[in-house]
Amino acid sequence: MDNGLNHVEPNRLVDAFLKHPPQDFQASTLHSSLYYFVTNFNLLTTLDAPVRQKIESLVGYRYWKKIVHFPTRFIGTTVTEYTPLPKNISSETLINTIKKNSHEHSLTIIKDLPLSSPLLTQEENTASAALIAQAKKAGFLAVEGQALAYVDIDFNDRDDYLSRLSKSRRKNLKRKLRSLDELKVEVHHTGEHYFSGANRLEQLYALYLAVYEQSEIHFDLLSKAFFQEILQDSQSNGRVFMYWKDDILVGYNICYVYEDKLVDKYIGLNYPLALDYNLYFISWFVNLDYAKSQHLKYYVAGWTDPDVKAQLGAKFTFTQHLVWVKSPLLRFILKRFRHLFEADAHWHQQQEEKTAK
Image 1 (cartoon, rainbow, N blue to C red):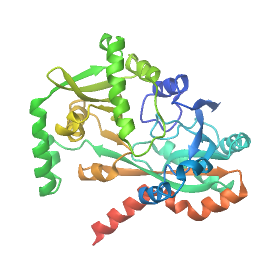
Image 2: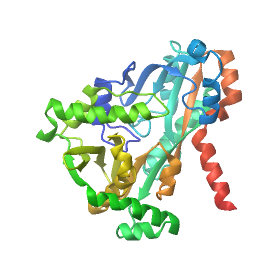
Image 3: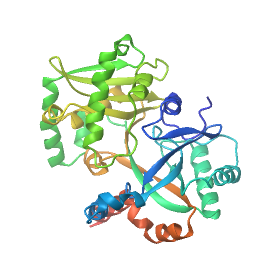
Image 4: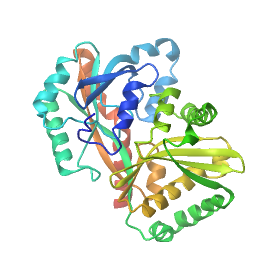
């Protein structure tokens, strides 16, 4: 399958996504390298957390919450950091293709188009900018997307990296990193015989579910079959970092070495042990060490918890979503209140204002 544009991960993840979509999703292609999925989307999912919580606390919400769910076609996938685009196809042709297929659903959302991403080539950024401009011209609403965290691997070693953080953060992280002395770290390649047994799959999937269930946002629940597919894929250049306390698996994360990047994709945690051993913070530094040892240029750390990742030294690059709304009334409402759906952009603006003071 043609990789297309905008990938910071192997396209074999997309193959697995199309073969095993998340629960209650349907996934396919509109065109070569133009992927989509369809689901019943809760419009509150991407609201600023305080606003969402206020709405969900209203009397009778559990009875009327269905009115904020809409049949939605998303252009893109949930396993790629950005929406992949086909090569050598004009933005006008792509938008016409997308609009032609938009009548069956209340919303059509082109998700996570990069805005001058340092992780992509000039060709890719130019193609995304052209698609954004063409979508706006065609009547799509632009909504600011999430903050993708990444780290430049431009430090000499862990001490050099820590020296760039504030004194208080450095002291706090060094204290947490002591937990690493009590754990055994294993790095396995996807496709190893190690992942062929049903028991191993059950163990890893259970820890993924533990993270999913404690998350504030429930959107794409990946299946056990999806995990089996990616864990047994020897061609994707996947790495599974596993953290053991004696014979107890405390947690793991699945990353991919792709071009000049180590891309962090999936995590599983054994609560409360993972919290006791500060695994979130430990894994950050283990991943950085690995990226450095492999002479990579970037560690790509994903979309969630931007405030925590900022404290860990991450930089951020942003995206934009383009939304086509079939109903004129819903379009009017979303246009007026779209700022409420731009949580990461608000967070970033607040951080910049703090820095400027």
